[in-house]
Image (tube, rainbow, N blue to C red; front, side, top):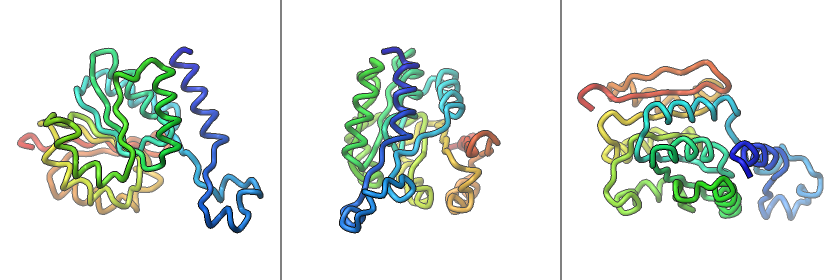
Length: 211
């Protein structure tokens, strides 16, 4: 399958796949077939994916960290761009079924050597980055997970960031209030950032010159 075919497959999966908690199953909510009540495998819009692809192709970050894999749609865009110059992406997802689907999608696109998956909590991964990255520094971070906790992740991520590392985050427009503490922290730390008015709003942040 081509890269475009895998993207369309993932887009179809995002429309149809739903996960139900044990409590929801006990209540019979899984039988109602209402995706709004289950756990959807949300993905970024296609235009946002293309933006990420173009940005990575331009910046050529050697080491990319993705917080929130889901079924690997954004991972596909990032890995496809990184594959062209031998970059590598490390991505984390707590749902094992989503990890399995994401792994299949990346494999189907012929990008398995470009992506490393971490199954578990984001905070656990961040605390173990030294061993996961084998001492490498992070050049590019894409955040697309629990937006209310970014300000907790950032202080721990800082020591792993390369000089000039870039942070990009989705939903910085429609969920800007939840990301408020993180944006305030970036400003306090002297980071320059802008929120691009496309799709759900894309945050692009770069460190101060001395960072």
